Length: 389
Image (cartoon, rainbow, N blue to C red; front, side, top):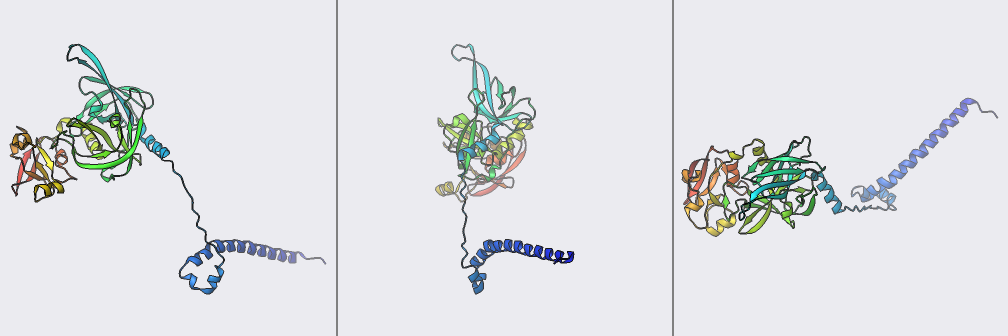
């Protein structure tokens, strides 16, 4: 029997529809079995329906767990590589007279620095270079080297700034040091071995010491930065002038060193303080830092409790000997304004003096020659003193 063309078309369409139903139904069944039934079994509401429970009785829910291994040495290398090209080697060369023979001799010193602007400004800690009567050579990561000029030293932060004539350099990126968290892992980079070769150390940001002052004394100086980071690196002298890097790859601070009572103490100048110091250097305003001329002790809760103070913030004008002349420098702005030993400075203008806003930091926000009002507590009485810095 011969089939007519119309019937053949109908049969073909039927087979196509049947195939489509099988394919779609199969895919739907697999999806329902793998996705919907496990959800029904674990859903508190749907599992109450008996016919759905029966449908999911034979379903086994499998939680797949994958283990990802991260090699910490690789991650440290990756973190450091982002900042390594901004780290430089600084060679200081000076001709000085021997104190005994009176003959001139050449001395040199190697130290670490950090490129902070793409046009060649370099920041370092002052002890990483020879400051007086010296010439400077800077070695870069690509093997090139440049003569450098010392722009100056910021007395507030002890940061020294040099300049090389080189364009399009890799500058370090800055982290926000105000958001730093104790216990976070950090990496130190040093380069002071007489050739360009970075060295690295991994450690922890172990402390934020809000009362540490760069004055190098047992009391704080109104002209020195107060508040530093501390890390647990070994051999920190090899890293002075270099950066500490957070795991984001950004610089959290620059490593420094001072000697107190014949003991070397290492710390990091927070990146926010570095950036503020940079603005002074960029403007060539190293001599514009204000001078109050006073020594003090930051008032903490502990200090207030031990000494019976009725306040827990401020800066107490102080000298270990108890002598006015050692707490207030002769002829200074503090002496002219009438500041006295044991006065507690509680405000600079309208800004409160506390551990987050130490006296020296609040003063540093003003320029030499400006007049500020210090609110002080003297023998329990509050008074205001205008001071021309």
